[in-house]
Image 1 (cartoon, one colour):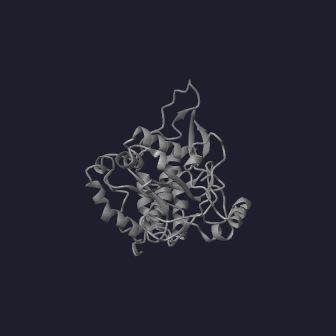
Image 2 (cartoon, rainbow, N blue to C red):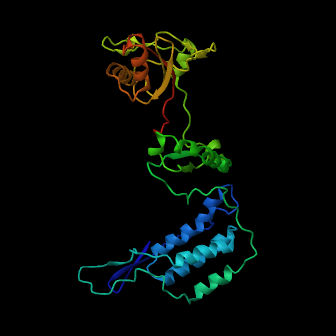
Image 3 (cartoon, rainbow, N blue to C red):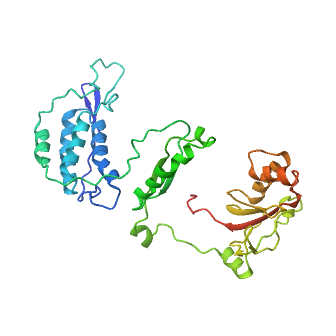
Length: 342
């Protein structure tokens, strides 16, 4: 922002750094059309909030319109965004503050919707955007931003952006009503989930990653020796008595297919996908970011004290008289966190 003192008050306007290139996203880029359509409105609204005077807003809007036209944005879309920014109500403008407690000047107006534009920049913008023979931008097949949220907590679905955006939204529209009609889930979920997409990896991220992948010597040595499960060896560790020692493979319930253990796992290993095997050969697959023995102690306590929220505890209460002595534990794979902690 550029701050200026005017009659005892601070006025603001957006600071524009001189650059040699137009950094705005091209209108025909591979991003989702709905996201691209919202860029002009967001930029005009931003400079509208930053400008204390409408004349400054129009001057900056003229430069902004020229940059959007260079990036092939439809003039009608840019014009609509400019006019919406014109009528944007600023209840607490950034410049509406006194330079001292003794200032008695009148505050700046907080609503500019009654302003009559009649400046040179305003007419230049209208002449620049006077083009109605421009094809409209493609709209999204499903508009989730206007979807009303019902009762309960709104679940959030987050995934990496891809061209199958519409197909993913279509799956939610098709099958989400099944969950809302469930007698148990209908009271804890909303009418429709909030769907967000993170940025997809670009060629730059693939060819020149900011973080290099380093080989793990411990995992390399474990591959040579054989990937197995084993206890931590501590004399007071309760988990060592339940873990499947020196086991390197497993078979799913009611299946003859054999799978190999993907990592060397002990009781102290964190970020583990594990397998619980009850005496009747039923299996439970879980995951934990904590040490494996901490998560297993929770399962054991839930069985003994019958925690009704635990599916493992309910099974042992029904078939094994709340006795965890026949329970077996096996680590399937270790998934280490990313170097930045994600």
